[in-house]
Amino acid sequence: MSSQDEIFSRKSAQARSARMVETIYGCKWSLTVYQLLANGINRPGQMVRSVEGLTTKVLNECLRKNMEFGIVERVAHNEVPPRVEYAITPFGEKFIRILDGLEKLQSEIASER
Image (cartoon, rainbow, N blue to C red):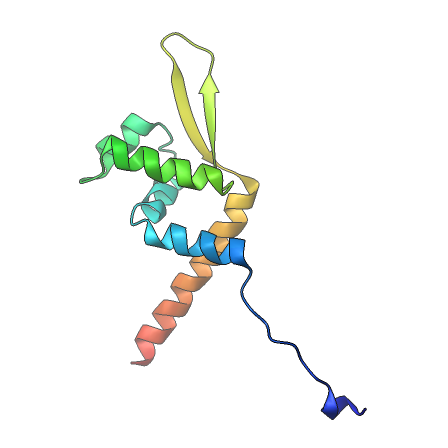
């Protein structure tokens, strides 16, 4: 068999990574949360106050999804009153770079039209 006769198997998207991208892009607040965290706004109350239209319920749901995927981590401080902060994980930093690449690709597609 020559190299030109090589047979390739069908390639499909990895189920978990495809679901992760779809879920995060489907959540209209995830990208905003990443932007808040990048700007040092890491406490839930401060996040809600910083973005018009963002509610505590929606923020908690968004953060929970991101924690399930390992993109964001919850840091609970042992203090009175309790203090909770959120941070991007090392995996999350890699994932956000991929999202940035998708955004750049979308900008290139839009500029070609």
